[in-house]
Length: 228
Image (cartoon, rainbow, N blue to C red; front, side, top):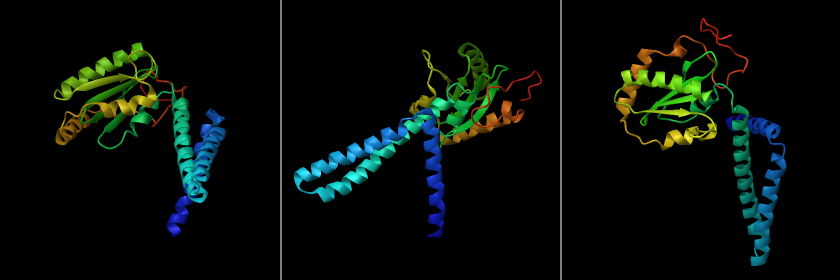
């Protein structure tokens, strides 16, 4: 019991922080969520009066109203979070880190002085290279990285993705869905073997300390390759 009580304040604090973050981007979130709850409860209760069971309908309406509020709040919070991350260097890496089991993610396997980045994810769908930054410059980074992957893991399909809102690009919030929809063509042991080969090859991250998640926009890449 003591453990449950100690966890509840943490969860409530997390919900509160999420709400504050969402409200900064979406000032009407509180009114919208409350409105959804009131309307849902009111409709279910009205139906209960019509059929002669207002008490049961009230209980059901409360539960459904809470569920509807949670769903609406979750979606608006997610939208706000992606909105804040949009166009920030390293945002795609933060999304990839939460893709789930079955994928090995390596942020910033390639990077240039303009903070254009390429991240790598390896799973049963093969190797996925995710580039973010200026599309023209990112294409050059992706091409170079694909050549490297072709030498190291010939048997693995390589898919490249450019994050953005232009034609042929994938928005930040759709990265996870895009990767999960890719066909699984490699057995588990082969994925492990490819990861071991890539680990032995090394990458930019082994020589350069880059923080996880979105990086500050004023960070620069000097010629010596060390972040300031």
